[in-house]
Image 1 (cartoon, rainbow, N blue to C red):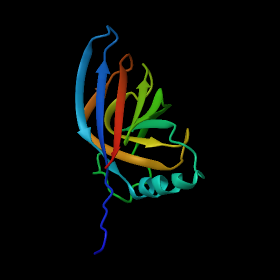
Image 2 (image 1 turned 180 degrees about the horizontal axis):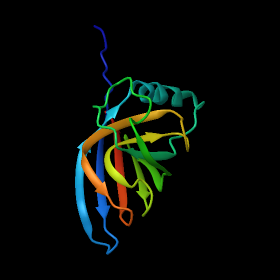
Image 3 (image 1 turned 135 degrees about the horizontal axis):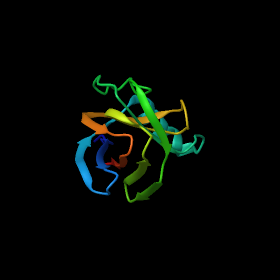
Length: 146
């Protein structure tokens, strides 16, 4: 009898847009795609030889997420993660894009291990979030290994 194991990596992304008055203007939750470089990154972490995921970026690209993606289509802004925590098989990344950062018609997001360039873990494309110059946005990204 052969032992068969399947490991899946999935993600849920929650986006919250808040106006300058502190009121929530828009909220949505979508799925993400762990790209090929992300899967290779996860495997490489078993030997501890890679830099941890540290940044999240948003952009205005609208091309569907694909396994071969290594960057966002059109990056609008990138910030250091506010937090990165792991509980069981779920790692949660949180990033806050303050007023003036990532402004525009935001339609994509990704998680990276560098302030620029770096390895992309995952990417998602979603219905437009119009982030005004005075708006703040928080993205909570949960990655589950099952």
